[in-house]
Length: 322
Ligand code: FPP
Image (cartoon, rainbow, N blue to C red; front, side, top):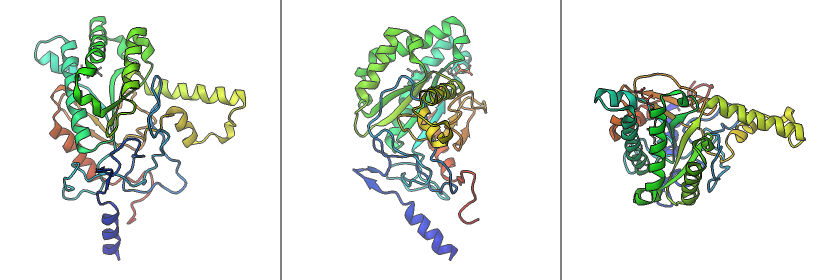
């Protein structure tokens, strides 16, 4: 019996193609899928805050654990590594840590570490897109990063300005939908408008990965903002506070309907969350490496995905076989 159930599970998890893409790899595919079922009565998980973002095509897609989609770990056309249980994570989140140490080891200013980090981001975004990851969310600037030396903050702001100015020159950007979380207005009107234009321009890119860049973002601030919104709706009579549940609060945090990250990758040897996606990472699988972000290779990402693929996600419940 156990053998039959195992075979049935494997069949259900087989990679399937949809519009020429691995199942779940397309725009608004309602990814967030994984092989495990949510515990009975669990709310669908919510995802990211959307301050300063444009709505996504297919936005509002529910991302309940167990909604099914996903390609084989290792990506398009590759077979699952031995022992893999889960399909490719539809949504990967990354804390891009280690730029400063990377620069220090080379006797360079920290801002050059961030510049190298930005190049790694381009490379890894392309790789994630190529292997069929649907959503990539990266922590580029936290609400606490304003406390860094002025020159370093200016260096990161200059990087953002460059990114904006050169965005159209990179043909790879035709296969990315860019959005932001966090309050980008803090970077000034010109930069915020330019970043907004990129989000708007890429919003409808077809066959694209959704790249969410967290800028002036803090997980606690995002939750507080959603709580303020809930209080305002309750005060105006638009919402009954007694009816507000996990799914409803999640929609306030994540009006675009981006599914929760399945896998969090943190390079740079630290093992903490650092106020990133505090709500959304509730059931994410975590993967850490000592490699510094600018040195992260495509192979490192594949290794993280392979590790994820061998895990069993239970969402607080029990494994199917008890
Ligand atoms: C953390 O490393 C990294 C940051 C605070 C900035 C990350 C920003 C980028 C990679 C650039 C993103 C660019 C664009 C265009 C989106 P750290 O400085 O804390 O490293 P350390 O721990 O070694 O000091």
